[in-house]
Image (cartoon, rainbow, N blue to C red; front, side, top):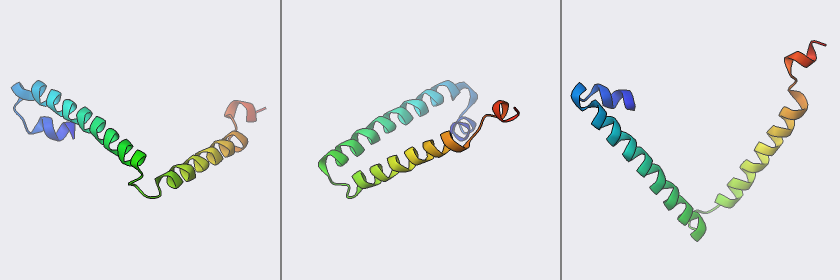
Length: 78
């Protein structure tokens, strides 16, 4: 996205364009998180608690598998 933006503006305006892009990106992220959090708190997003719980269980299972089955190359050489 940055490359596409900076290639479409004159070189003299690249600093301003980069600053505007980053400002809009950060603002959009903050607004999106706030809206999503409030929608989740109000219960308007059905099934999100279940999806988060399922995701947490998958991550925990993956961490246990990684701990048990992935060995460091230095230790396996003996």
